[in-house]
Length: 232
Picture 1 (cartoon, rainbow, N blue to C red):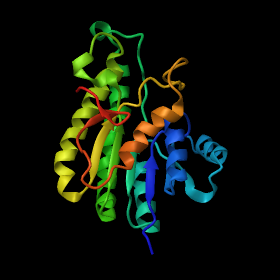
Picture 2: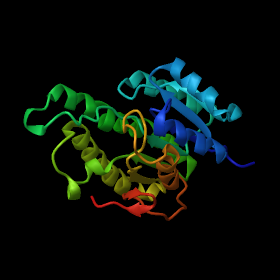
Picture 3: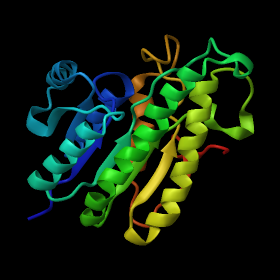
Picture 4: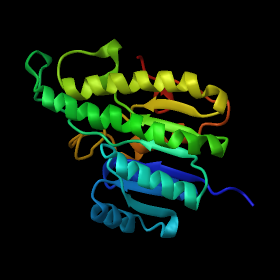
């Protein structure tokens, strides 16, 4: 009997995270829809209409207790994890400049966008190892590319630069465990954070799912959009 494929998507009650959840469920994954507000997560899961393949759970990546609770549930129920999508992010602070940024905003962005993903990786890598074919996707942004960086959105941009660095380090450390980890920029997507005028959410989500579905021996430690490398 084939092992059930299990995925976790953080920040998944709306936008790109919700669409990634839908696409993974359509591919046959059992997906944990992580949401800071359980009620919103449950409502979002019902809208997907994918049967029992989506499990809404309260998950705040800034609260270690919610991460530990989910880790224990996954370990007990499934024994392993196949996919971790670190999608949760806050503070696209286009109104800020680095010279006079509110550092409290920067700290909040780092706590979710960087440390939240880092906490999730530390908690779930042991279960990803057990799957023998783990995949981690860190949802990043071209705002975190040093090659094209300029002024603006300092909290968000710095947090994504740091997330990309974490991707590189973990990829090197996890290569022998057959865990592939990549950063993915979904592009400018029409979501609550991205605002109107962006590409359809399904296209941005498909870029993330591409990294989830990489074959064994596929790239790791890379930065991609739509399957093509993005300059660091």
